[in-house]
Image 1 (cartoon, rainbow, N blue to C red):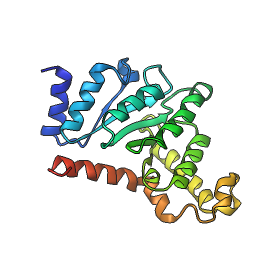
Image 2 (cartoon, helix red, strand yellow):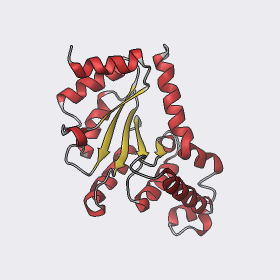
Image 3 (cartoon, one colour):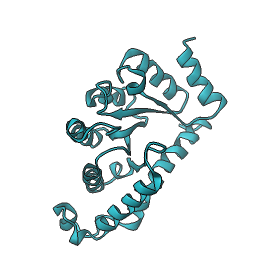
Length: 211
C-alpha cells in the first residue's frame, strides 16, 4: 500500500483523527493532483474530513483546484485552512480572497478556517456569509494560525470586530446597516468556536458508525 494511504489509515483507524490535513504549499504538490485526490478519497471513505492548507503563498492551491476537490465528494465536508491567506502578501492574495468568497458561497460542502489573512477581507467574508444564512453561516471558523499567529492577539481582534458587527447600525459597511440585528450573540459564538466544534463532532459521529 502507498505509504501516504497507510498513514491516513493509521491516523483515522488507530488514532481516531476526525480531520486529516494536507499541505500542498509546504510539500509542493497541486491540491487537485491525482495523489492528493486518492488521499481525499481514502479519508472520505474512512469517514473523516479532508483538510488542506489553502493560501496564495504558493501556486499549488488555486481556487479552481479547491473547487475540483470540493466537487469530488459534494455530500461530504472539505476544510480549507486560511481561506486564501496563509502568509501571502496583500496584493498577491487579493484575487484569491475574492475567488474564495465566491466559491464558498456556491459550494455548500466547503468550510474555511479564517487565519493568516487580511482583516478587512475576514470581516467582509463574515458579513457575506451571515447574509447568506444557513448553511453558509455555519461554514466559517475563526482561527489564529498558532503557533505562527498569537492566539491572544487574533482572538482579541475577532472579539473587537464582532462588537462592531453586533452594533450594525453604526458599522462602516453598509450591509449590516441595512440589516439591523444581522449579527447576534449566538452567531458570534458560532464563528468563534461552535461551527468548528460541530464540524468535528459530526466527523466523530461518522467515525463511530454514523453517516
